[in-house]
Length: 172
Ligand code: S3P
Image (cartoon, rainbow, N blue to C red; front, side, top):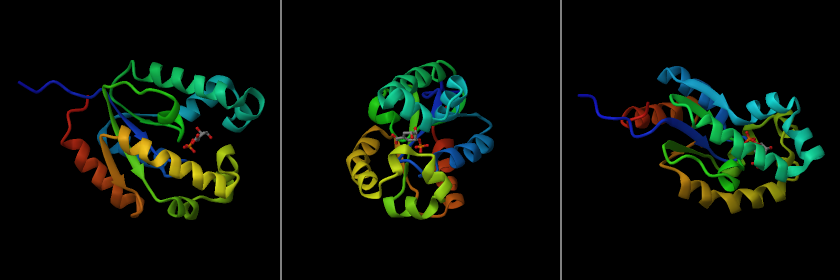
């Protein structure tokens, strides 16, 4: 008899711009799972960009939307879910999620981001404040993760590392 799955979904966490969305899309394809992105779902539901939600309704409101979205998503199974960088800081994630931390250094993140990608992120506008936020959050990501992958390597290289790890786990 096949062993019962331990996890319903794979949830990617990590700082802004660490590559959760790009990695999540590839992982979902490789693992035959559905890809879901919390920020994209919130933007579609609110018909508003994250930037505009932060400006018009404030960050606290965005955090409420994030918690609601991850709660709803984790009612389902068989997904790779990319979260926004603040989600694991402010929201709880279902215990039945395999949480993977995309662990890249702040300077590597900055190098990878284009100006356009930086402009979309309200909390990445001031570099020294963003660096301080990174330092503040790093240990929280580490604490929450079931698996932390060194994301300072090239994206295709560390995707292989995650796939190998996940294939050894029992995920629906
Ligand atoms: C945030 C990260 C962003 C987005 C919002 C807030 C954060 O998502 O949810 O701008 O608090 O770290 P990405 O991690 O995809 O940039």
